[in-house]
Image 1 (cartoon, rainbow, N blue to C red):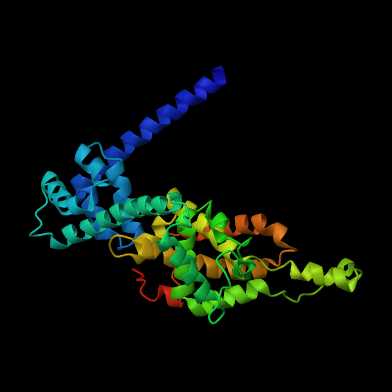
Image 2 (image 1 turned 60 degrees about the vertical axis):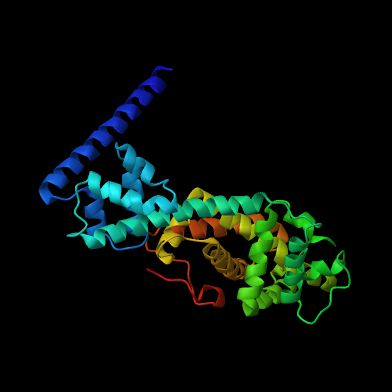
Length: 332
């Protein structure tokens, strides 16, 4: 117990020491430059994730209640919040006009990310309701987008397996991600149709690859069965990638991306564009990993998750490749 207690005392002491040192350095920097920390960040850091994340951290760590609560300000109150903070810091916006604009953009991004998280959580918690005509309409639109010219014989049908659902009624597959999974799949199918159809086609086709010595010794029937297992269920994987995107959002990992591509508040379509990107990347990643069969899905997904997290650790990272669904993204 004693070593544990001693470690706790040391950790607490180091924590308060670092806080005191940080505040002392802030005081010295202000005296030397004549500028508060918010000014120094806005003037010395380029717009995007680098600036907004520094502003967010500075506000959260402030002793002042007004600064602390600024990160949770309602979007409609942000302009007044900026004015109040400028008055508190005795900053004349007439002589520093760009400062107010830059600071307001950062607060809009911070508030937008928080509101987007709430909106996404609401969609995730809303279950698919087969008695809701809007839900049914979205589902039928998904079929028409992914199977153009192929009529759906009935609402309950094995045909749903052709686009990667597990059974004859897709509503059971949306239990984990609720309507969020359907929204994402439909967005991908409608906004990036060519890519969605290509990914769907690839997921249904067995891929030819080199067999190992052991595999060559198997019967022809066993080899065909083995090779066919390399594909995956498009819709189920889409729902799974929705879960991955959701966790990146909730953990804050997507701040890097959103603060770099959304000049102000990130919105639902930014999240859906991110989903499209992740579907593209996972499909390529799956092919490169060359898994033995679908039983390796969790391993490949975990590795892919770590790969994306590593990319997002770069404050200049923006997940916006050149594909149809990302045409209106802005890389700051």
